[in-house]
Amino acid sequence: MNRLEIARPPLPSTPIMGGCHCGAVRYAITARPKAVNACHCDDCKRLSGATFGVYLHVAKEALDVTSGTFDTFRRTGGSGGTIPIDRCTECGTRMWHLPEAAPGLVILCAGTLDDPSWAVPTSHIFTEEAALDAVAASDALVIEAFNSTRQALWDHFDRLYPS
Image (cartoon, rainbow, N blue to C red; front, side, top):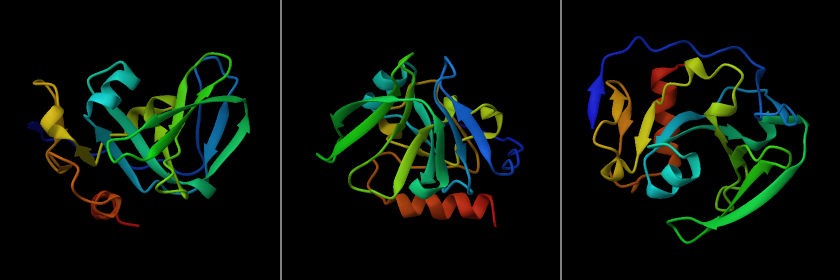
């Protein structure tokens, strides 16, 4: 994976607002995210329609959904666990994943943020499946096969963005 020297943008203050493409779903993130993670696995490529997905790890209690309804698609993850994925009922925008293995966690799609410009991944996982032109910031944690824990991603985020 290629590396790029960047000036990492600051985290925005909370609440961090977002929503779906049509505006039916609106939400606020009311606490600091735990990570900004890029996933290069084949599932995330297909689900995002891109060469990787970018996600915020957010404590479930810090996601305040203010409007909208959802269709839930359930898929089986690489671990064999079920991962419910919520999409806007009106426009189909994929909003977030709710991994059953981590019931207190929301994996929120960064592209649904009103301003995603600051969401530069602090970690990249499954990079052995990354596109040849994939790039990571030089200070990002890069993991070929995700044989680590989410806590390792969160700890690295905290090193890059001290409280």
